[in-house]
Length: 217
Image (cartoon, rainbow, N blue to C red; front, side):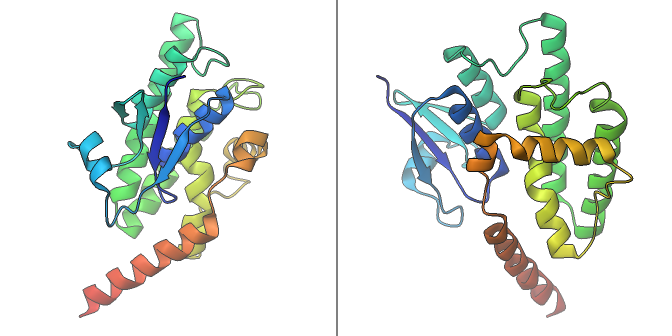
């Protein structure tokens, strides 16, 4: 059996995408938790371009970027397909995955005020477009790759609200998003492998305090 290794980090929403995909498909793997402030030589060897996690190493061959990894996993292990088989449905799913990727990248790089604005705009699109006609999850009753792509909303939203002391996703304003978050987090594989949001919040608060201190000096 081919050796499968996953380089990730407790702080990376991209890494959890891959963890959940592998768990959903029942694929065993070895997990290497990276300190992103002191990256290992192996990580730099396997991902010399971006030098980031996640990196999936399958039988010695590295695959980088979470969305690329998810599509690779879905093709190599076709059980419990994460992308629709129908060409049109697949195209629609890939559109929303690309949308989620773009929003996650921008939200990570924004200052506080701009980040909140970006989050609100994204939640509005999810509420008014992406989740229209969605029953429980993007895959209907079963999780699919679009749910995994938007998983950062379920992970980071509460953390961000805790740090800023704001309620960004108000249930009466975003009922579909709020319902989707609860449905997503209730899936056994997700619930059993959910990141430690308290640890993430503490980490981010410390980083924010250091940033504010440096700006005031």
